[in-house]
Amino acid sequence: MAIIEPTPVATNQSGRARRVQWRLRFRTQTGPSVDPLTGWTGGSDPLAQVILRFPSFEAADRYCRVQHLNFEVRKPASRLAPMKTIKPDQICEQQRKD
Image (cartoon, rainbow, N blue to C red; front, side, top):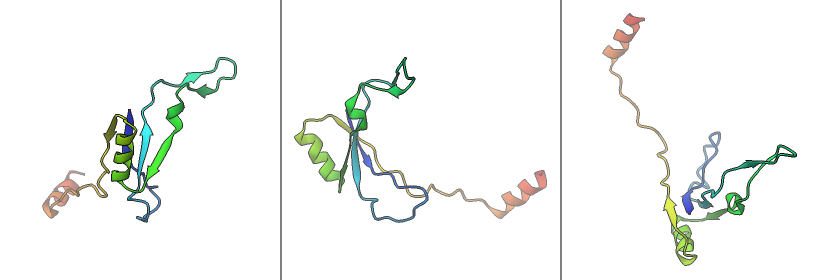
């Protein structure tokens, strides 16, 4: 199964240049395994490392449909979480408790 999601933006960058890009990655079919000789972690799923980038959601959607891939879409998170309104009376009450 493929997953279409927006390309993540680094948290220390405020630019919006690549915010419109989408990526397609594949859900892992098998979990990681540890090599008994070296102790390195590996896996037998070759699609776990494949990430395709698209300029728009429509392009990623069209690619999945042409290739007959089952896919799910993950919507972008909102830019800012809704702020909780605090009334001045609540602040005073909280300071009195402390």
